[in-house]
Amino acid sequence: MMPRYQLPISQMRRFGLALMLPVALLGVFTFPTQLQTATAQQTSEANRPLTIRADVQEYDAKNQVITARGNVQMLYPSRQLQATSAQAQYFSKERRIDFTGNVYILQQGGNSIRAEKVTYLIDEGRFVALPQSNRQVESIYMIQESDNQGQNTTPAPQTPVFKRSN
Image (cartoon, rainbow, N blue to C red; front, side, top):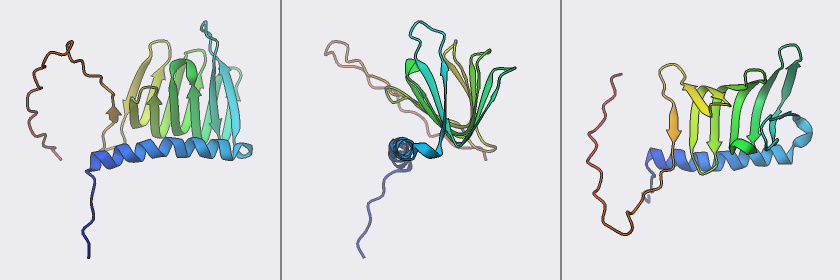
């Protein structure tokens, strides 16, 4: 029997995340007749739409709230965001989006966040994420290293081993 090469878990997760979003988006464009789409106009100068696709959507005209359920996919080009979740609510008066259920948000440039519940405060450009019980929120941030115009940089100090207290 030949030994198998195994990737570290962090690399497997990154690889899975990299594959998941294109597959999800492919599904949206492949089966558009099964999804309902809602587009809410942004009030900024760019006036680019926020697009939400889901299996079911409801609009509460009195409170100006859109609720999307089932295979939710959100595209927000003016904020360079893409998101998937089980449910999303767009509160247009408060300029807030609440995502729940296996939330994954990808920002142009590769930054991402994965949680059970995420609130996006549009005007502040701020995310508040909560995990499932006994779990953690995962964020991946792409950080560009500077080389100080070709000078050698001092390496970061060794990080101590983190032990969980479960």
